Structure formats: structure tokens, C-alpha cells
Length: 304
Length: 297
Image (cartoon, rainbow over all chains, first blue to last red; front, top):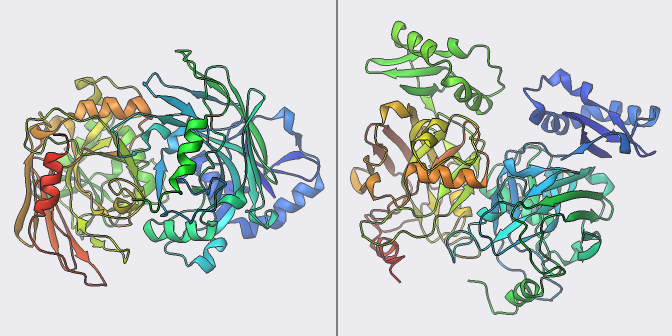
């Protein structure tokens, strides 16, 4: 099932015919305090709502997708957890130490929105396409064997990253938390529709040029391990997002006027735009230096 | 004014003779849990200030079993790196901050639960915390920035060291229970100069941290200007201003921790470790020397 947010604070399900059926009214019984409650409520009560949602999706043609404005499928999670690295980068190196950081939930944008590059003196702004996992229940210290039960579904994430800011040598990742720097779309696909999350292809096209193009089979640590470890640190809530990290072979600069299409096979595709009032310019194409540097990380004997 | 949230979900104002219930001033604000509620309360605090003060002045102190953190789950929990001169006269370092898990917050009288993870040590870091009271973006680095604040409170940024991949640990600061916060939000008008507050932290009666916020590298308004140039601040966000590392020490099972910021309040918690790991007591001189030397090279 594909769950989409659309127009102004509405939730819908994308039916087999590709149209969008509004299910916002089904969620009013839980008395949402604001639009940010709709998705967590849907997830929390999904078991009881599912028959009616399926009936509606099958019973009537909904709105054509080109007549609605899709929004970020995640509205305001309590946490956006991002993995550091987490891809082998095409090498056969052993997995590195699992590590992660938190990204500002105020950074979220959705399909058709615009990434606004701030005037800060970044060395470059990169796109990082990632598979994102949407949490399905409150989860604390879940065992790896149970971790997939804590997942509701999958969506697509682009982790916009300003490099070269902040204090050198400490990697605060604050350059990833600028407003508009967390692009999600086009919808959430429930996990039953993705039997093998390691058999997906992730791509990014910037203004028609292919940049990232990697399989999730290259992921270092599997999703159940990520969920288990992260939940051993912090309680996760329905609608929280874990972003599985990116393969850096194919990163490139984002700059004013760029049109960015991020896709994952089996999930979908969405577009966002880039604006930079300063009209800074970087070389187009793939950033080979970053690609090489990250690939080399694993070739050293051990991470510090 | 000193605003608190009681363990039975009443919003109170601390007077010298006790806590007065002012929940009536916010009765129209719907909520599901205290985590939802306080950001909404703080968003209207300024406009309802007169009503709150009237209730606080006219009411009788109530029986209070305990307090929650004044913001039990902030929309964002932001922490400044370093940010103290550590008693030296060095040049200030580049300003930087990061986000911690909002689920790490606990309230006064709570228990810090040390996880079984193989850290090298768990440190306490006593910090002045800013509580945001209004949506804000691109604040100026002067006293106008303070208008975005509801007030100040105390925070202990408990830090498990040696986890993760690179540089100083950050995930080791996000464990559930690792951010004791409180006891009250002290409104900005009660703190004429946030850069001249004494911060102390004692463990089992032994004084560990004892520093002044005058040693801060980047002041409160510079912190607000910096972070709001990156991200929109929203009511209930908590920003921890960093710590002076001269006086950090280990936290371990059974420890009783008392932190005080002059004019702001006193926050007490206990520590539990089911593994009963042990570290040397007293001040960690090694990390103190390292932090002092940080920007010398």
C-alpha cells in the first residue's frame, strides 16, 4: 500500500489504478492536534483501519495524481535519524562502526518543493539519496530478530549536505540541518510490498544528468541491525524515520536552478528544485574526489 | 517568573512559599501528553503573561508530588560544542552545534540509567539551557534575539564517551535519560545578564564543576543567531550552551547529582547502572587538560 500526504494536510492511499483516495476523514476519530499527528495516528491504528482503507482504494477511482500536490509523506517526526556512511561503496571492505546523527525535523520538504541554499560559506552542497525506513510502533531496545516488526514502511530521502562548515575535525553534521535540507517523497510504501529491501536501485538525476545509481545490496549494516542499535540508544516513535545512509559514488554539487529527481525502484520517484540567491557555481557532474575519499575509508585497517 | 510542570500534569508558577497552579490560563490548549502540551503553552506564554501572573499571585500553593522536565520532549534538543574558554584567554574556536535525541530528557528527581554499551566513561556536563518561546529564524546576534526565548533552565548533558565512529562521541549523549532538565523555566526578565551566572555540579556532595557563564566563547545571543541561521526554532526547542570541562567526572551507579545555576535553580538526579561499573571518583583531570589545550595548537 502506498500512503501519500497531499494538498493541505490530507492523507491518501494510492490505488492500483494510480489514483489517490482521500482517507483523511478516517483519522479524525483520533482527534489529531495538528497535521503532524495524522501519519503517526494512521500508523498506530493501521491494523484496525486497513480493511476500510483497502475497501476504499479498491472501490472507487480517486484523484488523478497530476491533480493533487503531493507533500512530504512524513510531516513532523520526533526524530530523523541518519546513518553515517553505511555503504561499502562498491568495495568488499568489512562494515565500519555503526554511527548516526539527528537531522532537524524542521528541514523537511516534499515533492515539488525547493531546497534553498543558505549564504553560509560551504565548500559544496551535495545530494545524498537514501532509502528511509518509517517506524511503525514505539520501539526501545528491540532485538534484531524483532526489529523488522517495528517498521511500517519505506520512503525515499535526499539528505542535502553542506560541507566544510563548523569546527574542523568534529563532524557535527549541522550542515545537513538547514531548513529545506531533508527531502522526502513521493509516498510511504508499506513494508509488505518490499519483501527484499536490499534489492532496490537508488538513483539521482540532476537536471537530466545521472549522478547516483547504486543498489541497496551494497548497504553495510542491514536495517534490522540499524533499528536494534538505534533503539538501544533512543526510544523510537511511530512515524520516526531512519535514513539508511548513502553510497557516495555519484554525489555531486547542487546549485541554483537544478531540478533533482530521486528514485528508488519499488517505491517511486519525486522531484525537487534548488535555489541559491548567491548563484554560486561548482563543477557539474559527479564529485570524483568525494567518491574516492569515501571509497578509501574502508581500505584503511580500522576506523578511529 | 518560574514556570514548572508537575508530575500530575499541572502547570505551576514557583513562588517562595510554594507552587501555584496556573493551568487555568492554558485550559483551552488541547493536548494528548505533556510532550505535546508545553511547546503549545510556551508559544502563548508571552501574550498570556498577565493572566498567568494574576493566577500566580492570587492562588494558594498546591501539594506537589514531583516535577517533570519543564519541556518533557522538546521539538528539538540542540547542543553547542565546547563553547567555553576553559579558563584560558585563548581565541574562540569555530562555532558548532549538533542535535541530540529529544527522548533523552528526564525531569528533576529522575534517574539517569547508564546503558550496557561499552563506553570508556560516562561524564556529567552541567549546562545553561535556553528554552525557545517563539518560532524564529535568522535572529540577530543582539538582545533582540532574547525575545525568541521563553526562558532559561538547567541541563545536564550526560555523555557516554568512546562510542561511534569519529571524533568526540555524539550518540553517547542521546541515550534515553541522558538529559536531565529543569526544574523551572525562568523567564528572561528574571535574568538580567545570562553571561554572569555561576554554574556548579556536585556528585555525592563533592564539588566537581564550578564555573561562570562569563567564560562562554559564544554568548547566548550569538548562540541564538548562529543556530537560527541554520534552522527554524520552534516553541519548546531547548538549546544547551555547552559546558566548561574543568570539573567533569565519572557518573556511576548510586551517584546523587546536584546541579545549580545561580538565579535559575537546582536540579537533582540519581544514577543507576545495572552493570555496577566503576570509574575513579573525583574530577577527570585528563579530559580537563585536553579541553583546556584544545584550541592552543
